[in-house]
Image (cartoon, rainbow, N blue to C red; front, side, top):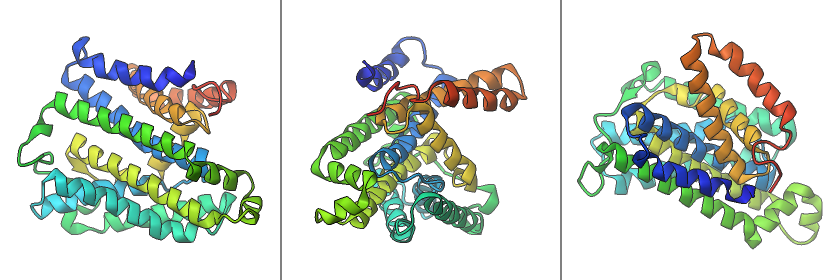
Length: 302
């Protein structure tokens, strides 16, 4: 049954604007949920496919967002240029940092990805030409073929939805392919996979770059959703949130990453509306969710 959960959630998001959820607040909330779901999905692909638990994944999200900001500052606002640039920049960042990080494993991998994430954070903070610590405000959302179609909340909503659905189907197909089977084999027993003639390092690095590209896509959407980019998008706290979304949804489950992100955003918003000290409630609730839902919201692995 859980196999249909992402499809059901995506269908609900598609119908939401026609079911009364068409206000500015609702569109903003749904866009945030879909952007974070896309970023969590890319991290979930790494965790479930390669067993790589990264604590610096937000850096790839931030690289994609800053690619939009930097191009915007130089007058480049065409999506046909900005979107590929954001995806390519994040994939390249993942490829370069992954070439070093993937040589490690376990806690060492977690710590080195955290280090790379913090390097990206401080680099973004030092970019005075693009706002530095204060962040950069886009002049407007990215254009599509010279038209400001993304200024429409409805159009942007369906763009986020289409890209989220497309990324889920793509990553699911990759995991189901020969590449994905070898990747899971390297996760289970790298030495045995190497003895069979496969190169675990190459497969893991390719997976890391793919995850980076999808996170860069999320960064492109995030920059356009908020029309603002700041170093906080790269901070380790955001990486921690993404990792928790994956855990909340169900480690080893791509659908779980989407469900976990949606649940995280909704819970955060509801509690924030109740009290300004909502974090004191939110933290224990997340801990209880991990304890009493060992397989996450998806209910099972896979």
